[in-house]
Image 1 (cartoon, rainbow, N blue to C red):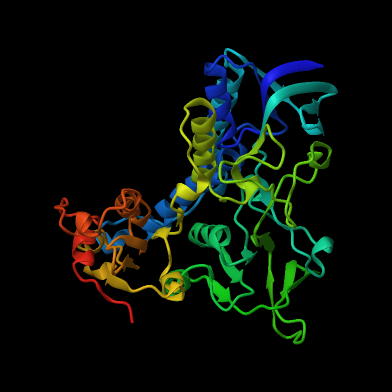
Image 2: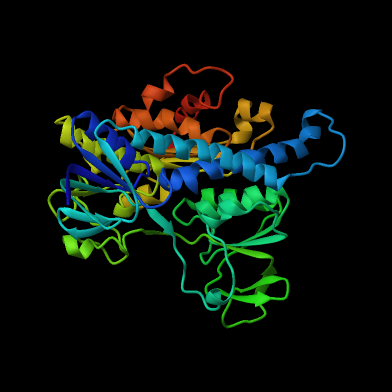
Length: 458
């Protein structure tokens, strides 16, 4: 039995930074990783997918060269093996960086193996028992595999196995019309594949306002992506040349064929094989670890950070979890999860930047509010770049004058949204932005103009 001051299980976005802080505080730390260092973001999520998005954007822009008066001789082709190699190089550097960082901790010991709880203070790994008064769970999540008729009889892809693809599918069928599915849909369409998105709901990304969903659907449709909505009962079967997907159990005629199938219907936490019951750690019905506002589990001395705690499903929420735990443990700073304002992006092109409440949520709250919208066709930077799809929208509390939420679907929208986010954290009135002088020509310069056009939300 080996004793440590702290054990960190998993090396996603929260684990390594926390291990480093604990080590710097002269705590003896054990870091356990069963697969690849860096977790989802580094290996199968943000970094590799955004690298692929960049390659797809280059292909798309090259095809549009004539719009900018640029002449390119010959046909435009995409070398998928080179695309994958570039992705692997970028992702691999990050993976190696995290591993080197952890192995270089002055008070750290790395265990490469699967961790299982043997009690509230004990964890087994590679046949050894490790003990610590503080244990931090950062095990992340994986693709959810739905209970779909026929699925067990056919090969399929997930966001993880898509990282091994070095060829162009003839016709990629994607089940799931939300963030992951739509990013893969656009990138593979731009690589040259035929793409169909199948969604059970009546619109794409149902958590967004209807106007956002409709605009994104149009953006993707304009690029030739086939979108099938209201697929209430989905089935999958082998066909002679790939897969056959049924969209309606009551109508066998409603179906489509493709060469490859990608599942993008959600995520599930990696908690099923941790032995949490032996430690007494409570989970909810979906397997997520139950935590309080400072990320403490039901067992004193055990914390859960990142995608496994249902407090956020993004790299930035995971890293913020680390900051909250470190602040409470090491800085005498009582930070809480409830203090943060939810923000995230959808990295299609153009991207969506989102912060705070949606218009629908504001309406449901019943509060008096103001709203303003502006199409990207009226943003000079977007016009100059020839990328005018999308719009800006902001909702403001009519009484406090504080910004409640915003959506920026348009060129650099994922960056511009932070102008509003920072003002929201400061709890400053919207006039802080509307009276500011921004640089011309930028997308951000239209935020003051947008806020000067607020009208009562009807």
